[in-house]
Length: 113
Length: 116
Image (cartoon, rainbow over all chains, first blue to last red; front, side, top):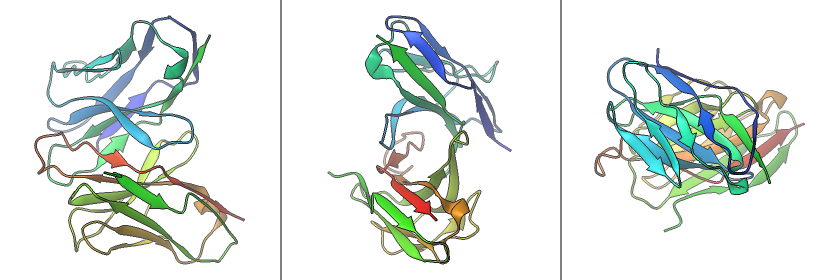
């Protein structure tokens, strides 16, 4: 079945450091890929998405490229801020009606001032 | 637009008690979902409703029931709560027919449930 694997946390970085959170997936067909972010005490918010191979999703300085050949969707940011501290979830969705989203286990990111 | 709303925000139950978690969305979405979030396990789908009048089991349906009351509302019921159901519960909605969004889901703020 479909699945998502992302790097385990927690990840602790200093402010302005470079961030990479790895995500790989297993899926049949051509899924859409997402990164969601969860700030403390809140629900999940969509951070970025890509709906086909080689698409790059971007938002708030974060980027991720849909790599079909390596089945990956790694999240990157060039210079993190304290406000980026949150839990990040990689996820995929089959492109069919009312389809379910499969989430990775989440990566907790903490940024030191 | 309020998006997806959930009530209550917090709840403490004793083992064996019942309760219903409420969810509503004002985005005219066809599909709605209930997840539970446990430490280190990400989100797991409990039940979903592809459209008004239909419901289907997800990954972890045991111990839960759902009702799609109308297009806006989707409730989750625990008939006899158990400590293993202590979790944070999230409701979400989506609509693949409202333009091609890749089935993006919109989440509520969550209900934190403790079963003693």
